[in-house]
Image (cartoon, helix red, strand yellow):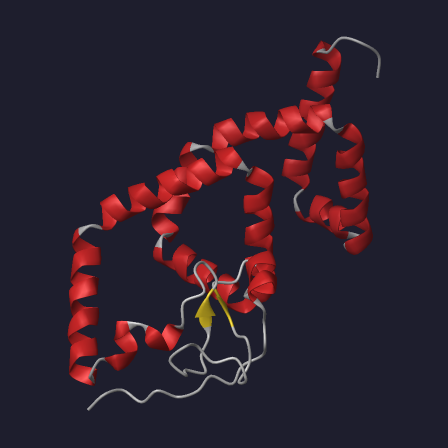
Length: 200
């Protein structure tokens, strides 16, 4: 038995609007069917009707077999697909980085909850590898952060004031709870001041 072909009833979005928002699909409305009479979404990239594709006309068994075959192929060629995707991304980034950033911002705004859920799932799956990577890059990041802070003292001071306004009394509570660490911080600062050039 063929899969049912149901008319789409979502919001109307023109192709131009879909391109501007970075959407993959658009819908012209129930009074604008495709040439075969389908009331369906269309793909933004070529204007093709979703229900006109072969998958909508498959039986359930055919669809399951196709999905199983596709998954098997994807699993066997994951590295090749990832390399191809990375190469395409780098080409787009080199050609027009601002357009790519705008596209990702639009996608995130339209799919905020799904994006956050996907990010959470990815971090849960790759937590150990990411922790090892962060540990290996800790010294590099420390140098980079120190350089940025030295080049942007006003922004550092503004961020510090904003944090203190959001967390009144937190610094004093930490100092009382950690007297040895607080003393070590003071000693390091005094040593830096005595060994540094200029006046303090």
